[in-house]
Structures are given as structure tokens and as C-alpha cells.
Length: 178
Image 1: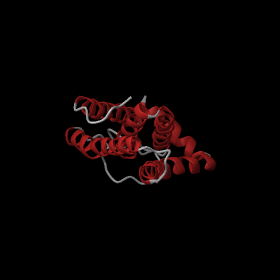
Image 2: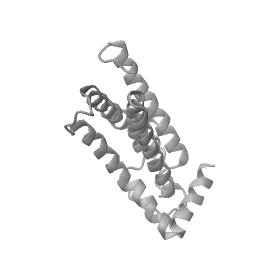
Image 3: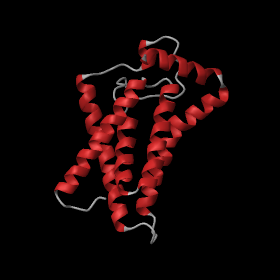
Image 4: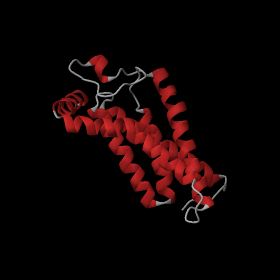
């Protein structure tokens, strides 16, 4: 199923130039925009953003970094699944990738962990980040750099990582989370 989906979606992205351009935009540049938005919300001096929200955003980023830079290398050490272009002929990469290990998607680990922590504090911002994360994940399948199961696995593991962090914060009574 993974092979069929990625070949189908990657062929569509390569066949239709506007779709390919949208895929590149979402897969390559939307992650930067999402990270910039989080840091902007943390650093922006405004009365609408409370210190509590800034703290939660900080925990969201920590959760994302732990998921991306500790969990992914740990899994890749034991299970290094090659990226689709290494295994399948006919995949045309629309964006570059920096490692051979495909599972789980580091982008999904990071962005879904961040999105969940934000969602638990603020549903509106959370849905925005979940939507952005999902768009990045789908675009990375279209772009030919991840299997669909890499995206799903990364999203699930990112959410689990964030739940563990939030559980720990609640257990220590460090701050109150809605």
C-alpha cells in the first residue's frame, strides 16, 4: 500500500506543475513558517499572549525537539528504513533530504508534538498547527521523500511524546494545563 500511494502521488506532483510547486512550498517552506510562528508568539510583546501561553509554547518546542532529535535517532539506530527513492524506481524527488533513514518522519515527530501541546492549551492555535503539520506530511509523501507510514508513524509518536511531556508537567504540578 505504501508503494502504491507514494508512486501515485509522486507521479501526480511531477505531472502537474502547479501541484508540484504547491508540494515544494508545503514540504520545504511551511515547516519554517510554522516554527517562525511559534517563536513569534513566544517573543511577541503583547498583552494578548500571557506568560502562561509563552511557557506552554516553550514546552511545545521542547517536546518537538526531544521527539525529533532523541526519539528519531533512537528508532533509526535499531530500524533504518530506506527512503522511497532508494527502494523504488520512478520516484522523482521534488525536495532534497539529508538522511537515509525514513521512519519515522522527523518533521511529523516535531510538528505533531508541538501541535498537541499547543492544542491542549489553546484549541484554535492547536488546530492551526495540526492542519499545518498534516499539510507538511502529505506534501512530503507527494515530494517522494517519505512513505505514508513514515508520516503516520511520526505523527503518532510525536503525539505520544507530547502526551508524556504534558503528563510529566501535570505530575510535577509545574503549571496548570487545561
